[in-house]
Image (cartoon, rainbow, N blue to C red):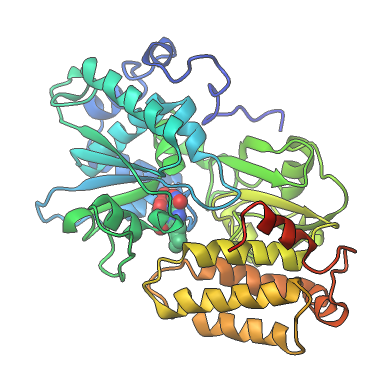
Amino acid sequence: MSTFEPVLSKYFAQPNAWTLAHYRSRGGYYGYETAKKAISSLEPKAIIEDVKKSNLRGRGGAGFPAGMKWSFLPENGKPRYLAVNADESEPGTFKDREIMAKDPHGLIEAIIITCWAIRSHHAYIFIRGEFVREAKRMQAAIDECYREGILGDDVLGLGKFKLDITVITGAGAYICGEETGLLSAAEGQRAYPKIKPPFPAVEGYFRQPTIINNVETIACVLHIVARGWEWFKKIGPESGPGPKLFCISGHVKKPGLYEAPLGTTLRQLIYDYAGGPIGEIKGIIPGGSSMPIMTVDQIDTPADFDSIRAAGSFLGSAGLIVFNKDTCIVNALLNLARFYHHESCGQCTPCREGLGWLEKLCHRLEFGHGKEGDVDLMNEVSVMIKGRTICFLADSLIMPVQSYIQKFREEFEYHIKHKRCMTGTKAGEFAQVDELVGAGR
Ligand SMILES: Cc1cc2nc3c(=O)[nH]c(=O)nc-3n(C[C@H](O)[C@H](O)[C@H](O)COP(=O)(O)O)c2cc1C
């Protein structure tokens, strides 16, 4: 922990770090290391090669290699777009909004480099509607750049290329974060996902080739160009390295956003960064609420793409949520079922109806009306949904359902048998509180 210097969040705590004046005072835009160097001395293809060699993997959830995605762009003469995914709706995730609010110019400079690399002249930042402060900060930073000739017809006055950046705000629906749902929303349609292939890199925004990357993924590009891919690759495991923003919440003493190298163990993140657990740990969700839960015996797993996967879960958006022993697993699952069912776009029947069935099953277990066989029924319903939908939204509930049952089955059975939870709360006690405050439907 002590030897690692934050890279992405280095300036977050400094006053006015979001202003152009502050960004310039630290060498931004015109410092030779970054966009200026990229545009004046590096060929676009060379940057793509460097990003490939860095092994930068997407920070939006799937961990797909960024350089490889960029190289899928067809050479067909069509206009190309960059869509920066700032929807960040996965519960337990709060990193992209911080980049936008606290270092918008760092993100803009990274977008400039990315667009030079992929030869795009228009980037869109798709921001979740509730992020009013972030959208305003981003727009203010973009406006400053146009005034100063950093963006527009002649980027940085180097006579090399033109770039516009447009902010689009979404309506605050989880599905807008799914890349093809995002594109539908950006085009002014309902945020319905589309079947892939064609992938957006081939046919995306208004059917033109489009690269979609998460905010944090793009933010990393700036540092890869500034310090070299060799530097980046040395931070954490070679197969998926780099600095990483971890969002730590739940039963920990100091919940918050922490930057650490990929490969830092879950134990280090919880104890050294987040001040340790409150009470005894029961479960850890490593990557945002849709990821399979891990148990306390897995706490020494390194938090990186491959290690978490080998341990049966996914790093996802690195939203780490800690549950202590007082957490009712059935209640926690009901909470998630309500959310994901509510967020289903309704396009695919298995997701629209099936997530509702799962919510109902969780509800009846939680409220003490569970029947013998309900746990198997939940499993069966989840199996029937999986793989039968256009996008992966349904999996966001299926993964918790299957993993919670696999790891904590006795809690579900206890609810059925005793009409209450093992943690000592009465049936429905937590859920009733949720409903009183308006979370229930
Ligand atoms: C239902 C659903 C919601 C998603 N929400 C987000 C999101 O809020 N932000 C994000 O970056 N990626 C989200 N993703 C992943 C995107 O579809 C896409 O993989 C990602 O933006 C690609 O960027 P990356 O390669 O840089 O990670 C979501 C995926 C699904 C299936």
